[in-house]
Image (cartoon, rainbow, N blue to C red; front, side):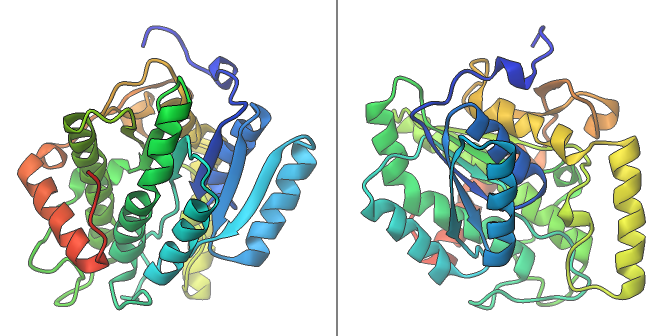
Amino acid sequence: MDKHWTITDIPPQVGKRVVITGANSGIGYHAALTLARKGAQVILACRDRQRGEAALARLNAAAPDARVELAILDLASLASVREFAQRELDEQRPIHILINNAGVMAPPKRIETAEGFELQFGTNVLGHFALTALLMPALELAATESPDRPRIVTIASIAHKQGQIDFSDLQSLRTYSPMRSYRQSKLANLMFAFDLDRRLRAANSRVMSVAAHPGVANTNLFRGGDRSAISRAARELLSHFIGTVLNTDYAGALPTLYAATSRDVSDGGYYGPQGFLEARGSRVGEARVSTQAKHASNASRLRQVCEALTQVRFYP
């Protein structure tokens, strides 16, 4: 990409419906605000109603003409995922952009989802896997009604480069390491995006699957969670450092917005900041992909495992 892309390059989004998971703060919030200002109808898919309502009020204050609504979605509950998807499908309206943004990062102790999955794998991977599969009819509907191709944007991380998929212990039952589990989930997210791209193209679908990462951005991932007072204080200091030296959450949202809207995006593309070690910068371009993320047979195996665990068969 020769040109320095900015949000001013985002074409009008009037007439498009956008679903963003985890849109109450950080990258998701800034992506929602920007797309709403460009004319899209944005659904803030949030786990916590109070925080979601606060974000909705903040967004409406910043963009009074925005068409934004709140929907409750807890990715750590497959029942909640199914309920959200069914509500969307019952409306028989298209989804033009799905941004799989929400995530859990490195809780100090092993926690389980409603169905008993390790929280990071269950939320970051299985929740988004099931959501995307269940919403595919709405994305395909958009493909028939709009000249622009619908997009699924899955948010990965530079942490995927240190990740490994441990098929013998995906749920960290034998041993739990906060960062190892997080890296595995982010690697799985990227493998999911690439596997979905291959399958969509094989089916001649107009829906695109792409991925992005924010670099190292100052989001709630660094501050939230069930942690001790000392740990929370340390993370507050870390988040201040990240926001000062690396990326703000606003800058971290740029790769997401690029992946969701740029006309230069390619099928199966992966985009991120082009600054130091891809950790920061307002210039967006193609991100580096680890060897393990390109392993198509492992991605296919992972998809089959996710289908079995969620009881959702992926399209196509």
